Length: 313
Length: 239
Image (cartoon, rainbow over the protein chains, first blue to last red):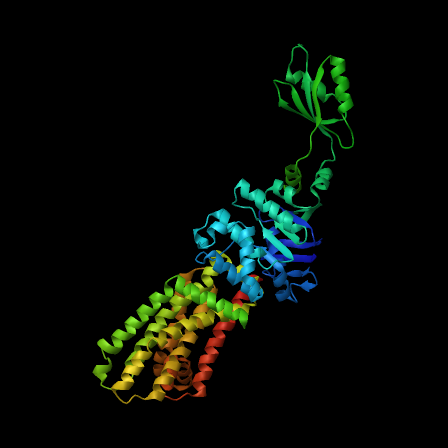
């Protein structure tokens, strides 16, 4: 089931939390929402789940509009809100039973679905406890179980791995990937590695607008317009002074910037001007001065850098 | 309808799980039992086969207890954020509001059902007016429903239970006795209006054994107004 967001705008007072956003998520796609706090990720997700009524625009889930047929949209969506709100005083099984009934699962299938959720989310040992007695990680699993119980076509997960330990994070990621093969998933996260590991597509939102949209690779390439290499030099017994080598490197005319990353071992990071390469010039410089190159490797732009560049402006 | 019942059942269960229901039942039966049978102008003092003493006490205890029951209903969900998960299920706001309303009303009906032995006892002691007793019970249920709908409304407007409780009491006081108190000193059209708005006057007329459409219209309007306002608050919170 595709999700189509059309010119979605949400205004709070004088602030435009979401500013005229449009995008489409296809069935079988896992979309990762990235963005600093307050960028509009949660607001967008809340609008898709019908919880927030947008100021302008519409969202279509499959053929249903959140404005015209909210009840139909609610049936096909599984939602895990940001703070994972749950009824603390309810036992897990009772809570899942309540959710299953509200979602309109047939009576004969409710028990089977609950047991399956307990198994998938690893709640066997805790199933008779009250939700309030669980650790944060287990609460998060209950949150996932309630979102998945009616086998929804669309999953909206707002920071699904927050509060989990590394093992649990890996498990949940695997689960999301597995689910994502047949369903439409939108998840948000602060952790870039997580988005990279689980999502087919990444969307970066800042100040209510989409600032980047694509796969992790394409985003990296986009930001990587300039060549960046790490250079290690051995001056072969000559008076090895980082500053001297630094000054010489700076004479290369295609070069935009040099950083000393390790003065004792003479390692530098060299960025070239857009569209040029300094690799050859660096090699020639070494030859001319009788140095040896100990390292000459391209530096990959990290997703963190892409993120920072796009959102701190 | 099915959805409403699912919500009602959960809310009722939650009253019992949190012990609220037990405390309420014990306190209600304790108070009303004490003043009906043992203390003050009780049945033996009045020397009439009538439950007037009980209805007088119930009229006041329900006034205080109902806000304590309703204050949690939406304030807690607003505070913990569970309201978001509830409203993104295939239910509409109305079903949620009515589900919670019915759960509280059901608890009150259970409490009143426990006082039926009073009725049976008194009926055996003398010639009780069955009609008036039954309509008085009905009156208590209608009063309760009105206060529940006020309480649900005040609970929905904030995420603080105490605010919900106090505001429900403040609004309740108007209908409970302030309007009738003012009516006696105002006189004229304003006096009539205030008299009509006081729950007291309607309860008196209903517990005499007469069900007047004027009284029913009053109670149902009050209930409806409370529930509609709650639904409006839920809508407003989402836009």
